[in-house]
Length: 342
Image (cartoon, rainbow, N blue to C red; front, side, top):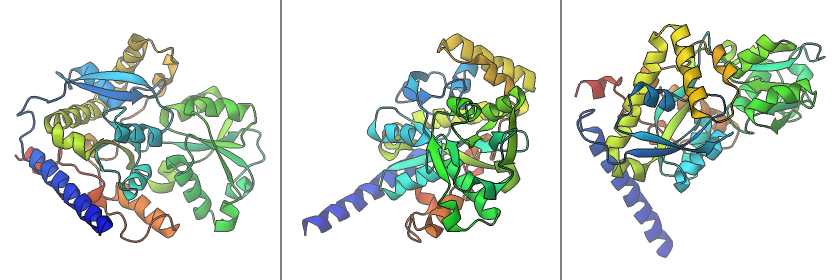
């Protein structure tokens, strides 16, 4: 009986949280003062996040960002948001799906990383490597930033599309390392291949000595694959803060999309230099495009259903266990037509 009461209580709490979030969405954008004026977050070494760009452009005011350190893992970042160590976190959409499947009360609110023709991630080997294609990777060590996250998904998709069986793919060894260290581990031949995202990938190519096997854009085209999330509780208690965060971040994405590349790079470099975090400022020179699928970071259903289906097919999730509308919402995004019309 107690167990049944607990489940009923959890469903009521979930419904209440959903109704509060829905009510918050009905308030016109920029109509209310943000409840919380400081947002704690984790950064990424040598990269400028869109919220950081938004703050520098003045789009988040009066909200200020409070950097509490860097993360090397999307799953760690969103877990920190769940535990309350930070106010928002971002990760690969598949990792968010897993978090929701584990009954974490969170909602993705804006896409912030994606792939397009100019900005994409790639799988690399050394120039003189005996690895020429997917089959040569059987039994090899591939470096990724987090096992089970986006990089492993893309490499697995590449292996599957190349005709490798499930048993053969299971012989590929995925090794976790910080993104900024992966290229060095490849050059030291501690890894046979590495998957690197966007500008870190382009820097490796520019440095020479590496050969590209495939990119996520070649495999799947243009799409968004990582999103920022807040907990349902945070959204319910601070709807105007979340709205302002999404609004400012969305505007920063469009600023980057529509501003001449040289001006964007100069701005990103200025931001990295001014924050004094002992970073490699040269990496931002390889920035090419906004690299986000939807306008202003709008999330498409496919940005999540792709990974839900992948997990179901691989036995990680049961069919129907996670539904897209339970994972994300565009309700705070000013580029969502239903929001913009209010």
